[in-house]
Image (tube, rainbow, N blue to C red; front, side, top):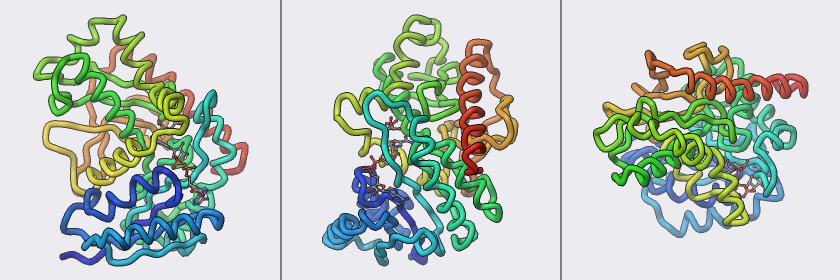
Length: 328
Ligand code: NAD
Ligand code: LMR
């Protein structure tokens, strides 16, 4: 057995936290050989409920759990953190866009970035789930100047997984036979799920994209607006599927992506594919040796270019807005 990995989860008493913690504790995120020390970071009003979740974690008697702390101070919460899952934030309600949360939630990620900078472990890996996830990740990264920016990521794995299932259903193949699709841009309604490089049941994805009506009026809006559809149906934003995507993201980041495939993650742009440097944008990525790398050399059609530019333009606007608020 290796020594325990310190995993900090913010918003631990929330609905995603509840769906996430038991899976981390059972070894689904870091593997069945890796013990974890869990730190549940909440605001003071959330501490009692987080204590209840911790009691339930105790009652599972997970062999991999080396300890559970509940805290309401980010400086303590991120001290020594190897993996930080930044979930705690207000979710949107019906009729809102995720960008409407910028001001309410942006303020959370500045002090958390500073606390990560002050005390997290040298190998810290951060996944931001709280919306608007890409720009919140940018805020946290900007406030952690001593931590390499590529350790801050935003979650678009849920969008990726949503797209996998939509394609599998359309093609009548199992999800496992859909590979190399990409979510580009922002985790918002402007995101672009790209099938042009995909392989679907051993056939090129372009066999599906030739059906432009399906692509433009069905597939892209279904994936991009799925979060709102879930809110409409459930009366609350996605929780178990979001937790599942967070598990997938960290699992692949730490343990590697499968050979011959890639996934999607919001990572800091190095200027690849014309995305302005420094923005946290979703790209096709692989993880090798514990680090995300943007898949290079994909040909981008005019159709894709327009969609990517629109979503990246929105990220640029969000960056300008949080600059004005003094958050980056
Ligand atoms: P929730 O309201 O059920 O839980 C949020 C929790 O965060 C609450 O317990 C609250 O007390 C806590 N919290 C608030 N501010 C905090 C802070 N400063 N520090 C620590 N904890 C804090 O919400 P939820 O459904 O769990 O969703 C959480 C966030 O995740 C929302 O912003 C939601 O929009 C977002 N989300 C993102 C994705 C994605 O794909 N990126 C998917 C689903 C949800
Ligand atoms: C989602 O995609 O389900 C989440 O980002 C929640 C939301 O506000 O849509």
